Amino acid sequence: MPTISRAAQFIPSKKGIGMLIGIVLVAISLFFPPAWLALVAYIAYLVVTKKSRRDKIIMHEIRRSISEGRGDTIIKALYYEAAKSFAAENGALMSPYKNDPEDDCLIVDLTVDGSEYEVCFQRWDAGGTLLTVSPQ
Image (cartoon, rainbow, N blue to C red; front, side, top):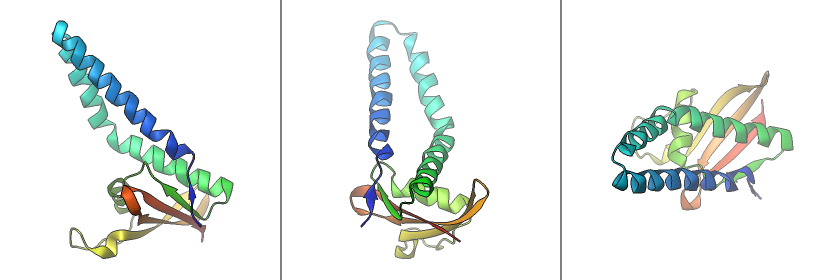
C-alpha cells in the first residue's frame, strides 16, 4: 500500500503563505499605490522560479523515498501536470497526443547521488501523484 509523504503535507502551507503574501500586498496597495510594484515583483519571482521550485520539491521527494526505502508514495500536493513536465524534461517517452491515457504513467531513468534509479510518476486520485522509485 502506498504511503503518503509527510513532506507533502507542508507544501500546501507554503502555498498558503504565498497566497497570504499576495493578499497582504494587494491590501497594502489599495492604501499605498507604490506597493503594486512589490506585488508585480513577487508575481514575477513566482513565475521565473516556477521550474526550479518544482524540480527542488520533486527531487526532495525522490531522495526521501530512496533514503526511507519507500516503494510507492502518494504526494497529494504535487499536481500530475508538474510531475509530467518534470518527467518530459528528464527523458520520459511521451505520447504525441495532448491528453493520451498512456501518459498517466511516466517512467524516467535518473541518476540520484551517483546511483541509477527508475522513477515512475502516475496520476492519482484528487489531483495527486503516485511516486515509485526503484533501483536499476
